[in-house]
Amino acid sequence: MPRFEPFRALRYASGTSLEAVLAPPYDVLSADDARALAAQDPHNVVHVDVPLVVHASARDPYEAAAAVLRRWVAIGVLVRDADPAFTIHRMRFVDDTGTPRETVGVLGALEVVDEGAGGVLPHERTTPKASTDRLDLTRATRANLSPVWGLALVRGLTDALADPGEPVGTATLDGVTHLVERLTDADRVAAVSALVGSDDVLVADGHHRYAVARAFRDEVRAGPDGGPAAGAEVTLAYVGELTADQLAIAAIHRVYRGIGFPALRSALARSFVLSPAPQPAPGLVAEMVDRGALVLLGPGGSSEWLTPRPGAFPDVRALDGAYLEHALVGTTVEVGYQHGVLDAAHAVASGAVTAAVLIRPTSVAEVLRTAREGLLMPPKSTFFTPKPPTGLVIREIG
Image (cartoon, rainbow, N blue to C red; front, side):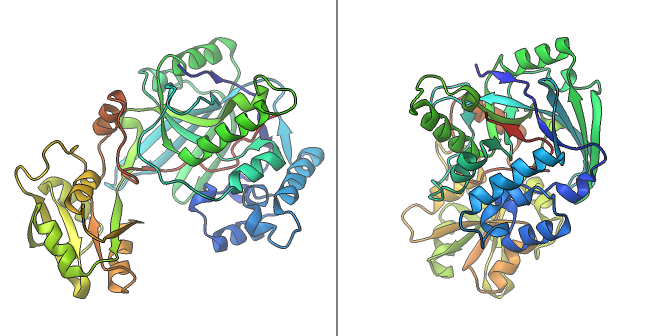
C-alpha cells in the first residue's frame, strides 16, 4: 500500500488574495487563459506553472520559472511551513442537478510506485504524451506544483477530515468556494497517513503528472548518488474518498472525424436502435440517464437516441465509452473528446467534426468496481469535478 506523508508546504503568505493567485490545472488552461491570469497578478501561480506561455520570450522558460519561484520564496511571497503538515481542502459548489455539495480531501505527499506495482492505480487507459514540458519544469524548479488527484478506496477518510484544521484561506473561483486548512495535530496526521496508506489509491486526474513524477524519481535514482531518490520518492497529491457523496462526475462526449456520417450512422445502427431525440439542451444528459440511451448528433441539426440493442454488447463492460469502441471497431473513425453538450453540438454544427455522440456520466459504483477488479476504463471515461486549483500548496522536492 502507498505511503502518504505530510510535508513542509510552500504557501502564499497570510493576507494574500487567493482569488488573484490561484489557477486551474495547467492542462485545462489555454494560452490565452494563462496570459490573462499572468496579467491579473504578478504573483499568480501561472508565472511558475505555465512557463512556455508566460516566459515564452526567455532563453530558457523553465529556468525563468524556477527563478521566479526562488525569488518569491526569498521575498516572502511564498512562506514555508515550520513543520510538516497535511492540508485539508474543502470545496463547496452546486452540481449539475442544482444540488448544493461539499467535498473534502487532503493534500499530502503520495508514494511514487512503479507501473503495475499496485498501491497507486490508474483508472482508465491513457494515450502517451510526447511533450516533456512537465518533466523539464520539475527538473528546473525541483517542485511539485499541480497535484495528482487520487481517490482513496479505504472507507473513513471523509470522517477523518470532518473536524476543521487551522484556517489558512478561502477563495471562490468559477462558482466553487475553496476552504483551506492546515492539519498539524500529531494524532490526526498519523491517523490520516495510516488510513490513506491502508488501501489502494486510484488516480482520478493527473495520470501524466504521476508518470512524470515516476520518470523524475528514476532520473534521480540513476544519478551519481544512486539509491533512493529522497524527496522524489513521493509526489504532491490531493486525496479524497471514493464515495458517491464526495464525487461529482461529468461526461466527456465523443466527437468523430475520418468517416462520413452515413457510414458512421450505419455502423452504430448495428449495435443501437436509432430514434428521434430532442435537440441538445443542458438537461439532456439527465434524460439520457433516465432512458438508458446515448444521443447521436449529426449534420443539419439531426439528433437521435442510441438505445443499446439487446445482446449487442456481449462481454463488454457497461460503459458508454466501451459500447462505442465495440460498435465502431473496423471503421475509419477518428475519435476526439468534448466537454459539454452544447459545445459538442457546436462542434458538429460548425463542421469541425462529422458527428458527436453524447454519453452518460460514469457512476461512482462503476469506478469502484473497475478499480477493485484491476481493470481499466476506456480513455476519457470520467471527468471529475470540480478540480482542485494549482497554488494552494507547493511541494519542494529537495
